[in-house]
Length: 331
Image (cartoon, rainbow, N blue to C red; front, side):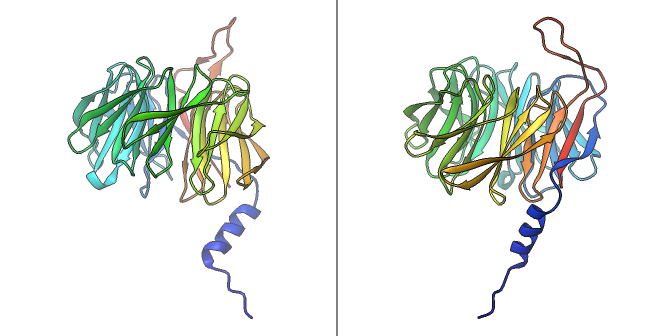
Protein backbone atom coordinates (compact mmCIF):
# COMPACT_ATOMS: atom_id res chain seq x y z
CA UNK A 1 0.00 0.00 0.00
CA UNK A 2 1.38 3.38 -0.98
CA UNK A 3 1.60 6.13 1.65
CA UNK A 4 0.56 9.55 0.43
CA UNK A 5 1.71 12.62 2.34
CA UNK A 6 -0.10 15.87 1.58
CA UNK A 7 1.76 19.01 0.62
CA UNK A 8 0.32 20.68 3.71
CA UNK A 9 1.74 17.97 5.97
CA UNK A 10 5.12 18.19 4.25
CA UNK A 11 5.13 21.95 4.83
CA UNK A 12 4.34 21.46 8.52
CA UNK A 13 7.08 18.84 8.88
CA UNK A 14 9.59 21.12 7.15
CA UNK A 15 8.59 24.07 9.31
CA UNK A 16 8.87 22.23 12.61
CA UNK A 17 12.16 20.48 11.77
CA UNK A 18 14.13 23.53 10.65
CA UNK A 19 16.06 26.06 12.73
CA UNK A 20 14.77 27.42 16.01
CA UNK A 21 12.53 30.46 16.35
CA UNK A 22 14.30 33.81 16.50
CA UNK A 23 13.76 37.51 15.86
CA UNK A 24 13.88 37.76 12.07
CA UNK A 25 12.86 41.40 11.63
CA UNK A 26 12.19 44.65 13.46
CA UNK A 27 9.83 47.37 12.20
CA UNK A 28 10.58 50.86 13.50
CA UNK A 29 7.76 53.28 14.36
CA UNK A 30 8.98 56.82 14.92
CA UNK A 31 6.11 58.23 17.01
CA UNK A 32 6.22 58.27 20.82
CA UNK A 33 3.96 56.77 23.46
CA UNK A 34 3.31 53.54 25.29
CA UNK A 35 1.49 50.48 23.99
CA UNK A 36 -0.59 47.46 24.89
CA UNK A 37 -2.04 44.92 22.46
CA UNK A 38 -1.08 44.13 18.88
CA UNK A 39 -3.41 42.32 16.43
CA UNK A 40 -2.75 40.62 13.12
CA UNK A 41 -5.74 41.03 10.80
CA UNK A 42 -6.66 37.55 9.53
CA UNK A 43 -6.37 36.89 5.80
CA UNK A 44 -4.63 40.19 5.17
CA UNK A 45 -1.14 41.68 5.03
CA UNK A 46 -1.77 44.07 7.94
CA UNK A 47 -0.85 44.22 11.58
CA UNK A 48 -2.42 46.78 13.95
CA UNK A 49 -0.64 47.97 17.09
CA UNK A 50 -1.84 50.25 19.87
CA UNK A 51 0.64 53.07 20.40
CA UNK A 52 0.10 56.16 22.49
CA UNK A 53 -3.24 57.66 21.52
CA UNK A 54 -3.46 56.07 18.10
CA UNK A 55 -3.31 52.70 16.35
CA UNK A 56 -0.53 52.21 13.81
CA UNK A 57 -1.14 49.95 10.84
CA UNK A 58 1.82 48.21 9.18
CA UNK A 59 2.44 45.85 6.31
CA UNK A 60 3.19 42.63 8.19
CA UNK A 61 5.89 41.59 5.69
CA UNK A 62 7.77 44.82 5.01
CA UNK A 63 6.89 46.95 8.03
CA UNK A 64 5.81 49.80 5.77
CA UNK A 65 3.26 52.18 7.29
CA UNK A 66 -0.24 51.71 5.86
CA UNK A 67 -1.87 54.41 7.95
CA UNK A 68 -3.11 55.02 11.47
CA UNK A 69 -6.31 55.48 13.46
CA UNK A 70 -6.15 58.72 15.48
CA UNK A 71 -7.78 59.79 18.72
CA UNK A 72 -7.89 56.40 20.41
CA UNK A 73 -7.10 57.82 23.85
CA UNK A 74 -5.79 55.12 26.16
CA UNK A 75 -6.14 52.46 23.48
CA UNK A 76 -5.64 48.84 24.52
CA UNK A 77 -6.86 46.37 21.89
CA UNK A 78 -8.03 45.95 18.31
CA UNK A 79 -10.62 43.53 16.89
CA UNK A 80 -11.97 42.83 13.40
CA UNK A 81 -15.19 41.73 11.73
CA UNK A 82 -14.24 41.47 8.03
CA UNK A 83 -17.77 40.45 7.01
CA UNK A 84 -18.95 43.92 8.09
CA UNK A 85 -15.78 45.63 6.81
CA UNK A 86 -15.31 47.01 10.30
CA UNK A 87 -12.60 47.11 12.93
CA UNK A 88 -12.81 48.14 16.58
CA UNK A 89 -10.51 49.69 19.17
CA UNK A 90 -11.00 49.61 22.94
CA UNK A 91 -10.20 53.09 24.27
CA UNK A 92 -9.52 52.84 27.99
CA UNK A 93 -9.54 56.52 28.87
CA UNK A 94 -12.60 57.29 26.75
CA UNK A 95 -14.62 54.36 28.13
CA UNK A 96 -15.70 53.45 24.65
CA UNK A 97 -15.04 51.46 21.50
CA UNK A 98 -14.28 53.12 18.17
CA UNK A 99 -15.75 51.57 15.03
CA UNK A 100 -13.54 52.06 11.97
CA UNK A 101 -13.71 51.19 8.28
CA UNK A 102 -11.32 48.33 7.56
CA UNK A 103 -10.49 49.65 4.10
CA UNK A 104 -10.04 53.36 4.75
CA UNK A 105 -9.30 53.26 8.54
CA UNK A 106 -11.77 56.14 8.98
CA UNK A 107 -13.52 56.21 12.37
CA UNK A 108 -17.25 55.65 11.79
CA UNK A 109 -18.75 55.67 15.26
CA UNK A 110 -18.13 55.18 18.99
CA UNK A 111 -19.89 52.84 21.41
CA UNK A 112 -19.96 53.52 25.18
CA UNK A 113 -18.81 50.59 27.33
CA UNK A 114 -17.91 49.95 30.94
CA UNK A 115 -15.00 51.73 32.57
CA UNK A 116 -11.54 51.28 31.04
CA UNK A 117 -12.24 48.74 28.28
CA UNK A 118 -9.05 46.72 27.92
CA UNK A 119 -8.96 43.49 25.89
CA UNK A 120 -11.48 43.26 23.05
CA UNK A 121 -12.45 40.38 20.75
CA UNK A 122 -15.24 39.16 18.48
CA UNK A 123 -17.00 35.92 19.39
CA UNK A 124 -18.19 34.39 16.14
CA UNK A 125 -20.59 31.99 17.90
CA UNK A 126 -22.65 34.61 19.73
CA UNK A 127 -21.98 37.27 17.07
CA UNK A 128 -21.01 39.68 19.83
CA UNK A 129 -18.07 41.99 20.32
CA UNK A 130 -16.79 41.71 23.89
CA UNK A 131 -14.71 44.12 25.99
CA UNK A 132 -13.04 43.42 29.33
CA UNK A 133 -13.64 46.54 31.44
CA UNK A 134 -10.84 46.82 33.98
CA UNK A 135 -12.24 49.48 36.30
CA UNK A 136 -15.93 48.53 36.34
CA UNK A 137 -15.08 44.82 36.78
CA UNK A 138 -17.40 43.65 34.04
CA UNK A 139 -17.69 42.63 30.39
CA UNK A 140 -19.63 44.56 27.76
CA UNK A 141 -21.36 42.46 25.08
CA UNK A 142 -21.93 44.56 21.96
CA UNK A 143 -24.17 43.77 19.00
CA UNK A 144 -21.99 44.91 16.05
CA UNK A 145 -25.03 45.35 13.80
CA UNK A 146 -26.93 47.76 16.07
CA UNK A 147 -23.66 48.98 17.66
CA UNK A 148 -25.26 48.85 21.11
CA UNK A 149 -24.28 47.14 24.35
CA UNK A 150 -26.84 44.35 24.80
CA UNK A 151 -25.53 42.96 28.10
CA UNK A 152 -23.14 43.86 30.90
CA UNK A 153 -21.84 40.95 32.97
CA UNK A 154 -20.21 41.57 36.37
CA UNK A 155 -17.28 39.22 36.99
CA UNK A 156 -16.28 40.12 40.54
CA UNK A 157 -12.79 41.42 39.80
CA UNK A 158 -10.50 42.93 37.18
CA UNK A 159 -11.02 41.15 33.85
CA UNK A 160 -7.85 40.93 31.78
CA UNK A 161 -8.33 38.75 28.68
CA UNK A 162 -11.25 36.69 27.34
CA UNK A 163 -11.58 33.80 24.89
CA UNK A 164 -14.45 31.76 23.45
CA UNK A 165 -14.91 28.01 23.12
CA UNK A 166 -16.88 28.62 19.91
CA UNK A 167 -19.90 26.88 21.37
CA UNK A 168 -21.59 29.38 23.68
CA UNK A 169 -19.09 29.88 26.48
CA UNK A 170 -16.68 32.75 27.11
CA UNK A 171 -13.83 32.51 29.62
CA UNK A 172 -12.13 35.53 31.18
CA UNK A 173 -9.14 35.61 33.51
CA UNK A 174 -9.59 37.79 36.60
CA UNK A 175 -6.21 39.30 37.38
CA UNK A 176 -6.80 40.32 41.00
CA UNK A 177 -8.69 37.16 42.00
CA UNK A 178 -6.40 34.52 40.43
CA UNK A 179 -9.29 32.83 38.70
CA UNK A 180 -11.13 32.29 35.43
CA UNK A 181 -14.82 33.13 35.14
CA UNK A 182 -16.98 31.11 32.75
CA UNK A 183 -19.93 32.93 31.11
CA UNK A 184 -22.85 31.57 29.06
CA UNK A 185 -23.24 33.83 26.01
CA UNK A 186 -26.87 32.80 25.48
CA UNK A 187 -28.05 33.88 28.93
CA UNK A 188 -25.20 36.28 29.83
CA UNK A 189 -24.93 34.51 33.18
CA UNK A 190 -21.77 33.60 35.09
CA UNK A 191 -21.59 29.81 35.34
CA UNK A 192 -18.41 29.33 37.31
CA UNK A 193 -15.42 30.81 39.11
CA UNK A 194 -12.39 28.55 38.58
CA UNK A 195 -9.26 28.95 40.68
CA UNK A 196 -5.91 29.32 38.91
CA UNK A 197 -3.85 28.79 42.05
CA UNK A 198 -0.95 28.26 42.36
CA UNK A 199 -0.91 30.72 39.44
CA UNK A 200 -1.15 34.40 40.40
CA UNK A 201 -2.15 37.51 38.42
CA UNK A 202 -3.28 35.91 35.15
CA UNK A 203 -2.72 38.09 32.08
CA UNK A 204 -2.56 36.29 28.73
CA UNK A 205 -5.23 33.66 28.01
CA UNK A 206 -5.64 31.32 25.03
CA UNK A 207 -7.67 28.18 24.34
CA UNK A 208 -7.38 24.99 22.32
CA UNK A 209 -10.97 24.18 21.38
CA UNK A 210 -10.03 20.73 20.06
CA UNK A 211 -8.59 19.49 23.35
CA UNK A 212 -10.76 21.83 25.45
CA UNK A 213 -7.83 23.25 27.36
CA UNK A 214 -7.39 26.80 28.69
CA UNK A 215 -3.88 28.27 29.02
CA UNK A 216 -3.52 31.14 31.48
CA UNK A 217 -0.18 32.96 31.72
CA UNK A 218 0.29 34.08 35.32
CA UNK A 219 2.69 37.00 35.54
CA UNK A 220 3.31 37.30 39.28
CA UNK A 221 4.83 33.87 39.82
CA UNK A 222 5.73 32.87 36.27
CA UNK A 223 3.49 29.91 35.57
CA UNK A 224 1.41 28.82 32.62
CA UNK A 225 -1.63 27.23 34.26
CA UNK A 226 -3.69 24.78 32.22
CA UNK A 227 -7.36 24.14 33.03
CA UNK A 228 -9.99 21.81 31.60
CA UNK A 229 -12.38 24.18 29.77
CA UNK A 230 -15.36 21.93 30.56
CA UNK A 231 -14.83 21.35 34.27
CA UNK A 232 -12.42 24.08 35.37
CA UNK A 233 -10.11 21.51 36.93
CA UNK A 234 -6.35 22.03 37.05
CA UNK A 235 -4.57 19.93 34.41
CA UNK A 236 -0.98 21.13 34.72
CA UNK A 237 1.30 24.09 35.37
CA UNK A 238 4.63 24.88 33.72
CA UNK A 239 7.32 27.54 34.32
CA UNK A 240 7.51 30.57 32.03
CA UNK A 241 9.65 33.71 31.96
CA UNK A 242 9.21 36.84 34.07
CA UNK A 243 6.88 39.73 33.30
CA UNK A 244 4.45 37.93 31.00
CA UNK A 245 1.50 40.00 29.74
CA UNK A 246 0.44 38.01 26.68
CA UNK A 247 -0.04 34.55 25.21
CA UNK A 248 -0.66 33.08 21.77
CA UNK A 249 -1.61 29.63 20.50
CA UNK A 250 -0.70 28.01 17.19
CA UNK A 251 -3.37 25.36 16.47
CA UNK A 252 -1.29 23.76 13.70
CA UNK A 253 2.02 23.47 15.54
CA UNK A 254 0.25 22.92 18.89
CA UNK A 255 2.51 25.49 20.54
CA UNK A 256 1.59 27.91 23.33
CA UNK A 257 3.73 31.06 23.51
CA UNK A 258 4.10 33.48 26.43
CA UNK A 259 5.70 36.90 25.96
CA UNK A 260 7.88 37.64 28.99
CA UNK A 261 8.65 41.36 29.04
CA UNK A 262 10.89 41.46 32.10
CA UNK A 263 13.14 38.68 30.82
CA UNK A 264 12.97 39.67 27.16
CA UNK A 265 11.99 36.14 26.13
CA UNK A 266 9.20 33.99 24.75
CA UNK A 267 8.54 30.65 26.43
CA UNK A 268 7.38 27.96 24.00
CA UNK A 269 5.28 25.13 25.42
CA UNK A 270 4.21 22.24 23.22
CA UNK A 271 0.87 20.50 23.69
CA UNK A 272 1.97 16.87 23.37
CA UNK A 273 -1.57 15.68 24.17
CA UNK A 274 -4.57 17.10 26.00
CA UNK A 275 -2.95 16.19 29.33
CA UNK A 276 0.77 16.38 28.56
CA UNK A 277 2.82 19.53 27.92
CA UNK A 278 6.51 20.30 27.49
CA UNK A 279 8.61 23.46 27.59
CA UNK A 280 10.55 23.12 24.33
CA UNK A 281 12.23 26.48 23.74
CA UNK A 282 13.07 29.90 25.11
CA UNK A 283 13.31 32.57 22.41
CA UNK A 284 15.35 35.73 23.13
CA UNK A 285 13.39 38.89 22.19
CA UNK A 286 13.79 42.24 23.94
CA UNK A 287 13.08 43.44 27.45
CA UNK A 288 9.73 45.28 27.31
CA UNK A 289 8.27 42.87 24.69
CA UNK A 290 5.43 41.79 26.96
CA UNK A 291 2.45 41.41 24.56
CA UNK A 292 2.11 39.70 21.19
CA UNK A 293 -0.12 38.21 18.53
CA UNK A 294 0.33 35.31 16.15
CA UNK A 295 -0.23 35.09 12.42
CA UNK A 296 -1.50 31.50 12.25
CA UNK A 297 -1.07 31.44 8.46
CA UNK A 298 2.71 32.01 8.63
CA UNK A 299 3.37 30.93 12.25
CA UNK A 300 5.09 34.27 12.90
CA UNK A 301 4.77 36.22 16.15
CA UNK A 302 4.59 40.03 16.38
CA UNK A 303 5.63 41.82 19.57
CA UNK A 304 5.65 45.58 20.36
CA UNK A 305 8.79 46.69 22.23
CA UNK A 306 11.17 49.56 22.80
CA UNK A 307 14.61 50.28 24.18
CA UNK A 308 14.46 51.21 27.85
CA UNK A 309 16.44 53.00 30.51
CA UNK A 310 17.26 51.09 33.71
CA UNK A 311 14.56 51.24 36.35
CA UNK A 312 15.16 53.30 39.48
CA UNK A 313 13.98 51.98 42.83
CA UNK A 314 10.80 49.96 42.45
CA UNK A 315 9.74 51.78 39.31
CA UNK A 316 9.42 50.38 35.81
CA UNK A 317 12.08 50.86 33.16
CA UNK A 318 11.37 53.99 31.11
CA UNK A 319 10.89 53.87 27.37
CA UNK A 320 13.58 55.68 25.36
CA UNK A 321 11.70 58.03 22.99
CA UNK A 322 11.93 57.14 19.32
CA UNK A 323 12.77 53.48 19.84
CA UNK A 324 9.30 51.91 19.51
CA UNK A 325 9.36 48.88 17.23
CA UNK A 326 7.57 45.70 16.27
CA UNK A 327 9.62 42.52 16.57
CA UNK A 328 8.86 39.69 14.15
CA UNK A 329 9.67 36.21 15.44
CA UNK A 330 9.75 33.23 13.10
CA UNK A 331 11.98 30.64 11.48
